Length: 255
Length: 335
Image 1: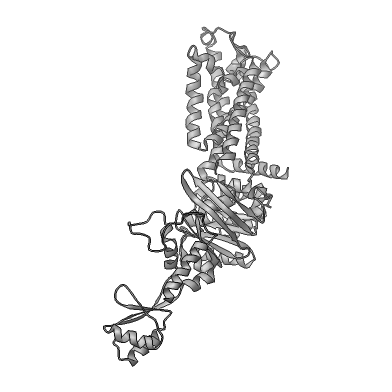
Image 2: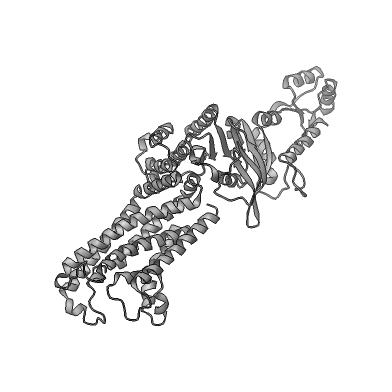
């Protein structure tokens, strides 16, 4: 127990004493809140135009999370950096010499990331929502409306899960650049594009980001194969798989 | 005490460490010597459980590394310079390490002062010179006030002042009763610091003996004599029971000879000498002879100058082949 507490403390120090990790986490907040606010402002000003082709009712909640598409990239970078810094700097050997039980090291790292990402994620989602609603004016909704609180909490959970997913993937790949090179294009380009292609779309629905984002929408698409919480659950399964894979690689491979 | 039992590491079809067995004696400086690529770093990583042995095992006071509680307090290791995040300050680099093993934060300042980095403690380690990076690595090794310290090529890239500092530090640590295990590919460096010597080549143990013994065996002096009248000289020397050996270039060499005595014998017999010079084989040469056949990438295609056929069959006990070679060499000299 003492060893685990010591490892947690040490991992927290590692994160807070490097500028890049602190900056990316702050960027996740700024980008999401800023871009969402901008989207809400524009939507409010051009409301009839913005909702002309909509098939579902206007989702004021999801609109106030519009910036998450970019903000999530910062969260992913944060997750990659936390794990990848160990490999890019060669520090992993010192870390494992200090904490030879590799599962403890990875668990400590993932736990600190979980707490930090959750705090920042929830802060981001609530600020993003409240600011967004204020800017949406007459089209806004409230936390008390049906499913809205679920969506706001879900947005925070979603960012946390993506962050942990990145930690797991980086632990598997053991390379910061490679992880960024795979995760960034995947979440920014591949997944959104595949989600728009007919047929492939059904598979893309089970990608971690698409599944996880179901929780953010108050109104679910009519043909959705799963509910919002199940979607987040699918995303969580991806995270478990990635972390498990990361642990196996860390445990089996020579450092 | 660190003990290696039949430690073996195979990468694909390449045997990096081959049934290595030796013990690192406590309280002294043990030099771990071998040419580049001999498997020194791999062995050190296996001691720390960073690389998993293909077979065999390493124990530290009877325990596996992963069984040690708060291992930084037990073994301090410098594996590579600059194993620190370039954006993190020297202080914070040591702080996370201290926290991971519940070492009080004030110890961080102590070791920073000890290695002379207190002035730059708050600076990012990315801007450090190689020497400063090496000092930071040494500070990390000493952080837990460990009984055992392990340094992999600690003087690499250091300026003469830094080398002297590391040398004195290692002697000081051993004087405090700590076990120091230090690798190097330079015999001359080890001769100055190590009390005990472990030599490996191509992953195999070549020698495991006290430094003094190595020096005694290898620093025998030779006297070179050259004369236009070899027969007269040989007669004169034979009368005094001095046995010379013909060198390749027509000169003679007397192992363990005394230049003054030989000069006087020649003078008494009226033999003209063109050369009379005491020679001392350096430890570096002795080391190179020992490892010549195990050097991985040899320049030129000449057969190894030392030793015979590669070993076949079950390998002998540690050091046996080395001792055997020594035996034959001694016999050659005696004959």
